[in-house]
Amino acid sequence: MPIRYNLSRRDIILVLLGAVAVHLLPSSLHHGRQQLVVETVCEQPPPNPIEKTVYRTKTATKIATVFQPTTTTVGVQAAPTAGKAPLDFVASFPETHILSHFPGWTLFRDVYVSNGTFYIVSDQAVSEFPQIPLMISTPLEAINSPENIEARMPTKDTLQFITPAEAVRRWGGNVRRGEKNRVLTVDGNTVLVNEPGQFLGHYYHLCAELLIGVQAMLIGAVTPPSTDGSRDFDLMPKHDLAFPAPPFVDRFIFARTNPNGWRDRPDFNVYFMRAAFPGTTIEEENGWEDRMIMTATGDRAWHFPRLLLTDRSASHRGEICGSRTQRIAAEAVEGMRKQGKLLGVRVGGWWAPVRESILRFAGVPPMDETAMMVHNKALAKPSKIVITYLSRQSTPRRHLTREAHLSLVDALETLVKRKGPNWQLNIVEAERLTKDEQIKLAARTTVLLGVHGNGLTHLISMRPNALSTVIEMFYPGGFTHDYQWPTHALGMRHFAVWNDTWRTEGVGEGKPRVDYPEGFQGDYIPVHGPTVADLIEDRVEGRIAGI
Ligand SMILES: *[C@@H]1O[C@H](CO)[C@@H](O)[C@H](O)[C@H]1NC(C)=O
Ligand SMILES: *[C@@H]1O[C@H](CO)[C@@H](O)[C@H](O)[C@H]1NC(C)=O
Image (cartoon, rainbow, N blue to C red):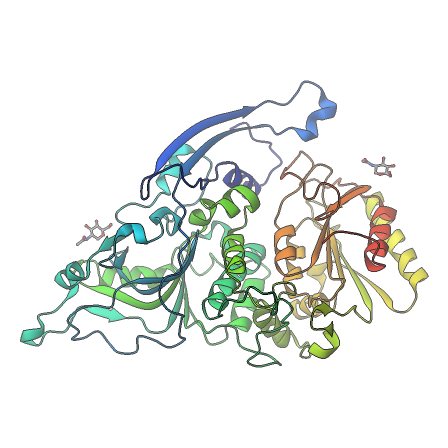
């Protein structure tokens, strides 16, 4: 495949997932029908090498599958404890309801799984439910080929609709003879992650994508809608001001990865999962396969009273992820936001329960809400401006040239010296700090600065203030939404810098086109230090317009 050689495999997949995204085009099709549109795009680099960086060298096959979009909020609010009674002798099983759904994120009540197939048990028409490919996929690794895209489409072995009568016929005991039903209830709240380890083993993808989406879904499910903006500045859902627990999850099931599949090398994923969900059981593919073996005869089923199903490929079939952001969490967050169910959307309040659990574990004192607000519609400015530059100079890939790094350090030091004692500069190589130190530093950082890379994931631990800022340095011409999207989702400001130019939402033409030009991953990324220092000063002094 004539793909630029200096892209990592992950980047190729991400950019192509965007390119091959399945688009939701309403009104073009009858309910429940799908249509495959295959279109091949070939872009050749131009002969003039000067223009090279603005072109993409790739051959992409664009497949657009058109689904009728379904905005569904069926049934009642999620209650934390449900389904305690075993289904031993019931004459009919509880029907499946969907509490909330966005592409790739589906919160079920009373869903069933038997021999690896999900069952929606209902007498309602199939058209009352979201379309299956927007809920679930065959859990294969994503690669860019029409065959793979087709292979990831769900089949009748992935998810089926059956009537309650059929469910009883398959899994019911003969009640008159005193036989129990052959359905076992898996009590409590389950999050089932239906994707292989391809992305999960990255701090960014697990914590800044999956967990953000999970949190938006779970908090949104128990939040009455409010669309008048009155709760946009809630720093924290109000049940426990110091360190509230995130929504209760009894178990995560990483159904398609082994125990290493969701762990990243520095172990931030473990840190986040265990600190945010300390009592939650984590089951992996062996456990899931056990459950499938137990029901392999097809006459038994598992019953999940409450299950959040997440599916990466299904998110990419949605318009927000597939066409606009390439971020799976964007479907959940944007969807819940539109319904007015994310408290504190302007200040990351809905994320705060997870963030504060992490900060508590790291040893950060509880947040002082009074000090963080000027009034109930605006965040306060921080008493100290803390700039944290995450240097990647010791990593082999994707870092600044030596001159650029030195020019940046020099410009930042000059700025901070000129500004006086209320300004602080930290220049850190994250890998030299402990995890606790990294999280503590992120929590008190005002301006997080770095070359595009995993270290910027720490933005999810930043406590918001009026000046919270993430500055991401790219190779000129490069851009992705990896950090731009979560920065905005959590109520902070993102700037993309290319050497001596920058852009942010609300200024100029807004965000640029996603691109990975040659040099994106290189060790020769330029940056003009004074441009970055001026940008920080202008931002802090309120001289930048926009959102
Ligand atoms: C259980 O699933 C396997 C694998 O998909 C399949 O081969 C088998 O026929 C299924 N068993 C029943 C009873 O449907
Ligand atoms: C970066 O910007 C500086 C300042 O405008 C300029 O002198 C330099 O040539 C630029 N470097 C690159 C690689 O574009």
